[in-house]
Length: 591
Image (cartoon, rainbow, N blue to C red; front, side, top):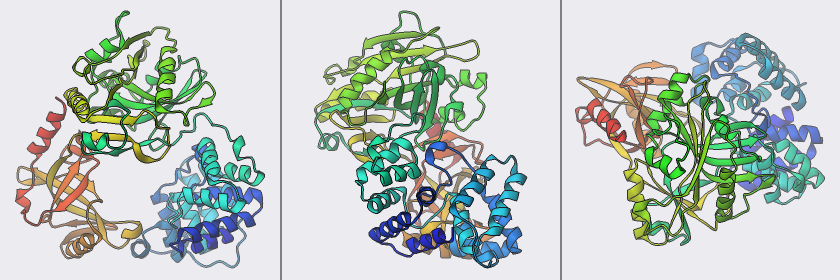
């Protein structure tokens, strides 16, 4: 473990990408194969392979207490160290006492991680954590804590570890990347690389693949400057979701690759009828047309006509819940809008064109086998768009209900094509009229490129809303923002008092953040560890995607994806927006 920690220090000491990969490649090559596989996983910042989805469930407070107990230092002393470095691992390195020699191996650390993961309750986990740290030198403890907290912070992304494996074992980088994507295991990818068998890697179902991402465009003209053969869909205001289906088992993953099946218990039943193994890509939305069962002769076109996607603020009530009540499922019904197929019947489809994948998806949607459900199909061309839609895919509706679960719908996203800016403008206006965010514009000839944001998929959205707000509290940042106050909590007026409505940390320049840090330090009203309450005198303009109901803030609202547009020194605090403005924006979204 000491060799690993020293290697991490060497990696952190250089900013040059080639030097980092050379250090990692040589280090991995110097180790026995089992230790090299473990080291590759640790260097990605994880205690376990990604596909295992095992978590240590060790939070910052537990780590903090363990370091405090073993170091004997006070809360104030540890806080001073934290402000100096900005991460718990570096606190451990400076605070923990020196130990003679090192007896920890990478394998033993991995075994300790497994024990902590399976231990039940904070007390049992804390005991095992202390045992591990007691055996470690301060330098080893530094990186053990960093791995536990998921904050390795040595300038080494997973992609660089892949490059290092390719370099160390003299194999093609694209093969290493593909193997790791399919397996979700850098250690196993390293083993295959060492044996020259990377081509043997096969997709591991129920391990999420990175999502293909879209780039924003400002206009229809810009969109069609990248490609002419455009497939066009509505951009829904929900959450991206990847569904893995195999022999009746269904698991759903978010864009962050977290499993979210439990938040939508009615959807697995609607997808389990698929007779072939598959991975689908789509968007989960709150859906106004899911409350009643469809008629036997109802087509997907009719289902779409009688329903619509609701704002994200409605769907938010369903997110992050371990248990979803039947009442909540009835109050906030959902639909899964499917727009792509990544895997079907034993074949990985990433290297097929969107046009080919769309045809396969249409067949998959038609093959759903409902029991108490209904499937309808219809060539779907929105009447207002007939002149601009040269093609429309066959649409499928699958609706599922049981006595215990309300109706859930799986819908093939309606698709049109456009070949001129005028076509796109017509489609954009229609999408907005339906209450959706805008358009997704895709190159029909494009392959599915996981994790990449190129120009093959484009998004054209409505303008962001903005608010003028007053900063009420600030926090110290992380990483390159160690030592500066960069996380701002802000508020709007509710009568004669300020009520918090959000928090943002992006948008200002480093120079602006440094200047504001000086101001906030001289205008603080109270301080608690890393958070300072400040005099409410600084006005910001913040942009956001939409407004949500929230109990997290005193205002009763929260902003989705807030970011700072600019400082407003030209405005007094009294010029900031009010809770009435926030309420108007929220109400406008709902209509």
